[in-house]
Length: 102
Image (cartoon, rainbow, N blue to C red; front, side, top):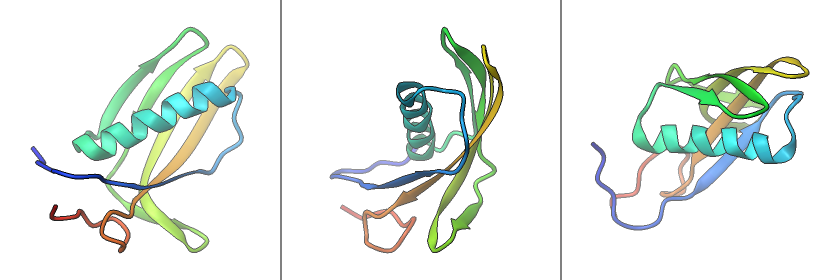
């Protein structure tokens, strides 16, 4: 288990069209960040308007010049199937995905 004292910060990027409303997208994004911080590889998602799976293969990827650990969500909504891709980029030490020693 990672032990960390102090503030950690970063960015999350979404690359995908989506049938989800903004609040649901933020919920899935929050799940991706929690998974990143806790070192999880997969999480089931189930809410009133969608259900599916959020997962990572622990790979670092780029969208243009923006990079981070990739997370994918395969979701079934009442409007159809959706696939969301998130990049979680920790900036705590100022150098991408590295973890601050504080």
